[in-house]
Image (cartoon, rainbow, N blue to C red; front, side, top):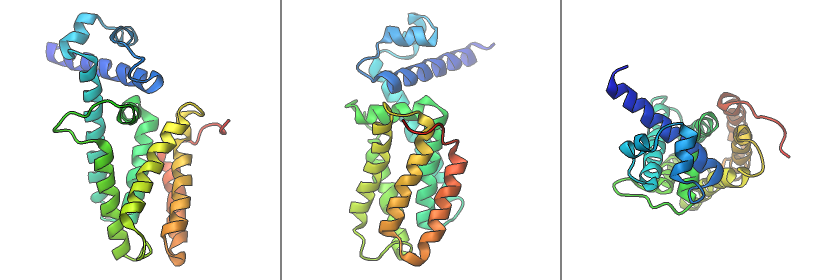
Length: 220
């Protein structure tokens, strides 16, 4: 195997192992020794790629930001209504959280006091902009009540979305996230969307939940 490819695979293995531990145990309770053991690499290999634990956290948050931009771009290519686009973005991000630890760890790092280094923006700032833009579009398209405070709704949506993961982490398996995202949208749709348009978006939420992955076992 070429040396460069082997180095890239080792770096990816370290990031995945660190993300898994950050997600499960938190940033402060995870040591570099823990990551070395979990990744099954040498300390030399880890320090070749990352000088400190903070560098690993930053790499994970960069990957999460890249995933958000990719998901948003893919949804924009569909040229769908603004509210549908916002729903698709949240469910796509939910699916990524179910599929792997990097996005999940990004959530925990963003809420755990890890400093975001410029030029990387705090993920919540980016998510607020995405939600605000789509909700403004939804008002123009008459899919959201015209008297809704869009900025308050965007803040509530982001808080709801992040809070679902934070509160669910110690209580239930990650496979329940699609169901929780659907529950979030059921409440938001009933509060934001005019009555004649609700059936379409409630049906869309059910469809996107199925696409995002299995609901997993019943909540405890």
